[in-house]
Image 1: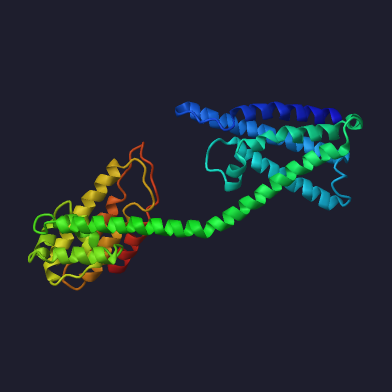
Image 2 (image 1 turned 180 degrees about the vertical axis):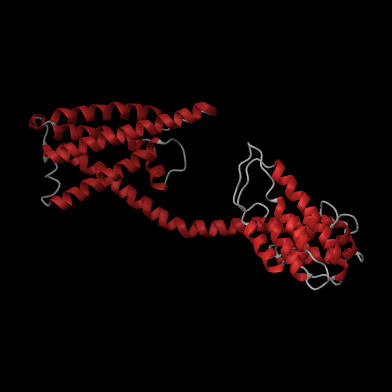
Length: 349
């Protein structure tokens, strides 16, 4: 067992030198950077395994009895100490990244300099014959000091993490608010520049219920500065812009519903063509595809019930478009919108 312990310790020492030689160096760019990172991780993994194996062998031999007379306490202290040491060694070897404050304070690579003293202490415990030449207090204090420093650093790291939690929440909230404010101003500026007589379709997306209230109100006010805004929307239902019109109609009321009754059917047929085109062109589908378009169409139809127009045939064509035969290279998905369309057809047929 002593032979295997010394062998594991030797391999750990070799891996340590490899780890120490690479630690703290800037990561090269490109593929070399990936190789550098992988090499560091492999060296650290080998070092960690070697250190754990050596420590377990010493524990089995009973050479850690000086730590505590109680086996459970002794094993717990050794486990916590080894884990803390490996955590600190990991942060110290991973280069000039975002290390915890305590690691930066001590000096990232200085922690690695303590490892040889740890390995020397384990070497002394493995080879009892050498203990006659070195007082036990020397290597015991060396080992105890290194482990104590590692545990203390880990406790401080946990404390730093706990302190940073509310700070990070506030910072993320502030950043999110700033981002939303910037986007709101950009949207409002875009709405302000819009010409509702010729470009109204470009701001219809700002009128949905998912938009910021100020943005939505500004877009609606801009749209209604065009006295013929309803006629404008009716005309666009019969063009490839039909989807944008449906998004508007789904979440906003119009003054003259009868004006939209028949053109809405034409708009659904435009959506049929859009669905077919997407089914033919898309390489990889996802479950949510076509869902929001379908929802906008069906919500619009609910508003125009009782106007004497049968929308079932058009919706049936919309549903059939989703059954378009796929090519061999296309990856199918189970669309969430299909059950929604099937349910609507069953209810209205």
